Length: 173
Image (cartoon, rainbow, N blue to C red; front, side):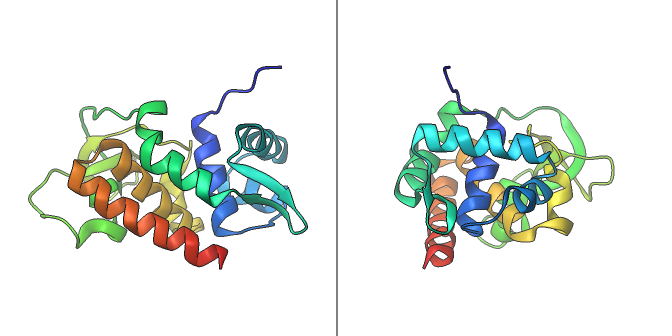
């Protein structure tokens, strides 16, 4: 059977990196998916080399994950900006990056009716990502950094990549 990574798998890999060894039930709750969907995502991550089984359970292969996020995610899962909508801020507009960049740049958002910002919409890697700020803030920050890698300028990608690498390595230590 041929396994192909899906956008959800990026969120699952980040969740594994931020919370190594967690159960499928915990991951499913974090991602807002079923346990079987979480299990399938981890299976694809292992097959791709982005995760592995360890004595603690499943963990992210940080070296491979960082390489994929920094150099491949924007090609594997491109995110074009769509029309302006209300939504949850992501990329350079998210709280994790907001102070790093010029406030004059148009915000980027994940479309959400209860969103607090109006800006250019991008499709999130995770359905229900707009709920993450209240449910799993550290995963929200990580996905916002990944969106900066997907839609940002070279400077955006450099700053976001450094922040993302630091966060993932700190959690693995």
